[in-house]
Amino acid sequence: MARGEIVLGCLAPHPPHLVYADNPEQNEPFSEGGWETLRWGYQRLARKLKDIDYDTIVIFTPHWQTYIGTHFLGLPNFKSLSVDPIFPNLFRYHYDLNVDVELAEAMRDAASDAGIITKMMRNPDFRVDYGTITSCHLLNPDWDKQIVTISSNRNRHYYSVEVMNEQATALGEACARAVELSGRKVVMVASHSLSHRHFVEEAPLPEDMSREHIYNHSQYVWDMKMVDLMRAGNMREVIDLMPEFTEQTMAETEGGGLTWMMAAMGYPDYNAEIYGYQSVIGTGNVIAAWDPNEQSREVVL
Amino acid sequence: MSEGPVLFGVHVPPHPQPLLAHEQNEGWGRLRAAFEHCREQIELSGADILLVYSTTWPSIIGHQIQAHPEPEWVHVDDDFHFLGSMPYKFRMDTEFAEGYREAAEKRGLFARTVAYDGFPIDTGSVVALSLLNPNNRIPACIVSSNLYANRSETIVLGKAARDTLEAQGKKAVVVVVSSLSNRMFTEHIDPHEDRIHSQKDDDWNRKMLEFFADGRLEDISQLSREIHGQIRVSKVVAYKPIWWMAAVMGQHNNYAGQVHAYEALHGAGGAVISLSPTSHSIGDKEFDEDDVEFYRGDRDVLTQGMI
Ligand SMILES: [Fe+2]
Image (cartoon, rainbow over all chains, first blue to last red; front, side, top):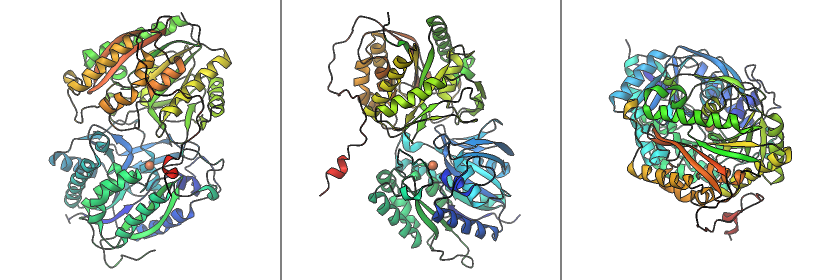
């Protein structure tokens, strides 16, 4: 069996607004659009993914929050209705997805071997979180790939952002080892925004773009600092800055997604492909990808 | 005795063990028995509504109020999925939900009702309603806990609930779903080995229980920030449920308190407590946290400090 590899890493924010704005048949509400900068960016990245040969999307989600270790979806299929608890007016999505259980178990074993507390989730009534569904829908609207979903352990709440960074790093390294041994070609996805202060009120028409802007300028400046480092291929520094960035901007990086993915990919020193940056209900969102293949790597924006 | 719209209040833990696994640990069984005792009290109370504030239902867009007349689903907990599924079908008081939204808006809050098939009702609400009101004898209402809300907003949210009860002439049993200390063990444990995570958490929990037993609701409310700093992990900004409870029930110490059970739930402090209004005041503390009637939004302290 050939060695497995990570063929692409994606930072893929999951505001349900983006699915809502797209009006896919799986989603019940109807919108007049909105957030095109992010949606068009996603469409471009989804086209790139069509040209890449891969088996499985492995996604780390901040909306499956676990306090007792790291959990992995452990059944081959999940089919249900996902209603966003925060934005139920925007997201009521009928999903039907397939899990690469073999890879999930291999990752779980590798993580356990590294001393991380783990659990397979094998309850068939379990509802898959909307972070997983939103990011996967936007990256692969055809849903023709298997996925692995990894929960985010909330060690930031129990300890600190520094502990989160350390544990997400260990988990990323373990997942990379599992990928290598599995023979799979894998797309890794860190599903989250950057700065994450929301407005607590919503416009009567949520997609009214005249009301959309970043929560405050300080959030914007921090986000741009991170995006500049990504462009420059300085991911080691991004991860080193992670504790301060996360605390200053209440960033959704607190779940550990980007840290996990960068550790798994060995902290790329090449430029990230930037597909778009835009605010969604005040939060800062960048779509970015890390392509280890020099031939296909692009300067997108 | 009760002149106001609240007959009594109960404080119960959100964890699923008393519902799904009460036979696996004696303490979980005692919590289950305490839930059942409160269920009987509720049945005898003549309440028109069960009014639930759940710390495991976070919201961002203001305050969300469940308004589906018959929400139905099979719920599974994010951490404790291996304990089993929680099928539910509840009965909600939609008239109260609409009235609560209006009353909250009148007091300056952003609030909205949610009434969607398949809306994910949180573990704490499912556990509380399943055990306290198993046959939906009494219609219920559930209100969320806003992630960013702090004291003034939460107190005003409680007062808006009381306004609505008075306006609709309804008698309520108030249910707060929250742990005391909320630090769980970060590894999986044998149910028989469950205990409060640390001596410090246990000491503080017992101090809170003394206050509860003495009926000192407003004193606990005034101590909320200290409690949060001492025994609450920093998931949210404050220990809010007690502010809401005091605001709905009345911000004083005139209660008869009863602690029906106090046990560990995977390390967290879980207690089933009831508080009934009386004419006697216990406690002599006077604190300086101000009362608030209307919410006027953020005070923009940071912006005002800029040149
Ligand atoms: Fe999110």
